[in-house]
Amino acid sequence: MSELSRRKLLMSGGALGAFGALGLATPAWSRDVSPWTWSPTGSIAGSGSGADPRTIFDAEADPVSARLLDSGAVPEVNRLLWNWTRNDQPLPAGLPGYLVDFIEHARQLPAWADTAKLERAAQFNKSRGLYLNLLNGVGGGMLSTAIPKEAWSVYYSKGGADMEDRVAKTSLLGFSVGALNAYRPDGDCVVNAVKTRLVHAAVRHLLPQSPHWQWGPIISQEDILVTWHTLPTYAMRKLREWDVRISAADAQAYLHVWQVTAHLLGVRDEYIPATWAAANAQSDQVLPPNMGPTREGVELTDILLGQLAEQTSPGSVSRPLVNALARYLVGDQVSDWDGIKREPIWGPLIARLWPLLVKFREGLIPLPLVPEAAWVIDEAARQYILFFLTKGQETKIEIPTINRPE
Image 1 (cartoon, rainbow, N blue to C red):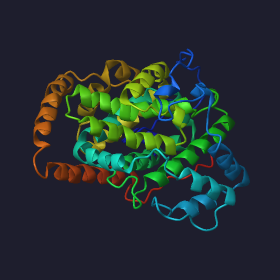
Image 2: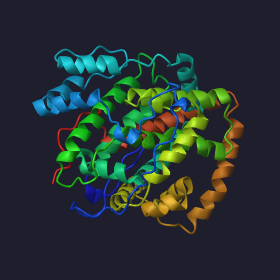
Image 3: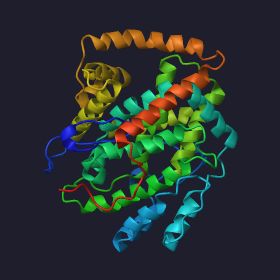
Image 4: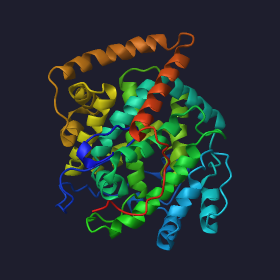
């Protein structure tokens, strides 16, 4: 997000930051290392090795990004890929052959991808965009700041030095998943997922070279799954909690668009849950032991909520409202880890009014043209968010070449 001195940012799908000085500190969190027990029979693949995803990374993308970085090719690759934006768009000429081979393979949808479900998910996003943007942005973002490994990896990588830009790039992928044309030929979800996969591989290569890094290998298959569960799994649980009417077909379609996205991000099919029951079971295993308080998470939360307050009501005192909303979305435990203040006035008010708002809105959803009108409003909000974060400058996902500068 711009500079650390601004201490602000918005989110739309998971970005993190830091608290205090850059010096090394004794980690304040240590995760449970209980055995991996989630069965691959609950996955899209239906079977698998059962190997612990904490020990598995990305055997296809990692050597590609490492070779690009070690050869100094990244700046030119980023330049060539800048205008590669559509799912159906051919790759530009001039890219290294090994990168072309990787991308052409990585951009293919899995054989189990269901076009009808992807289209249905787009319509679900169209009518429920308000909830999903709030849950995936503010809710998922607050959960992410309470995931120590994610907070540390973002802060000590290049993105930690400019969190506004970091979140804008993260938002690109999040908004792509929720777009009406996400996986259509003219959409950009495939492109942004593949670019993000290369970024993850680059960060895995670069972070061990940082003098500040002390937490071992990063962005494993489990790490990606942990973040994944702060998005669709968390969102669906909250929608159910709020009594949002969701048909079985819509629920499965929403899961499917995130299943395809996980595959394109490099997650093995044997780890991608096939059903909501399997997703909930996996989330219950991987999310709690990977969460906890860190000074980085507290600082990032301050940045994120400060920026959200500025976007919500520029020039006014809206931070207490944003604090209360965030605490309502993620609960007291995560809020305390993130250092979110309790708001004695706004907190109880939101807790009373939000269920009434959901009930009112759900009563309107079946009416003609309401989903279309809701989508227009939600899309305008998304575009405003991106414009605000990027200051009107075009933003694309790019492979980093350095860690966070000293």
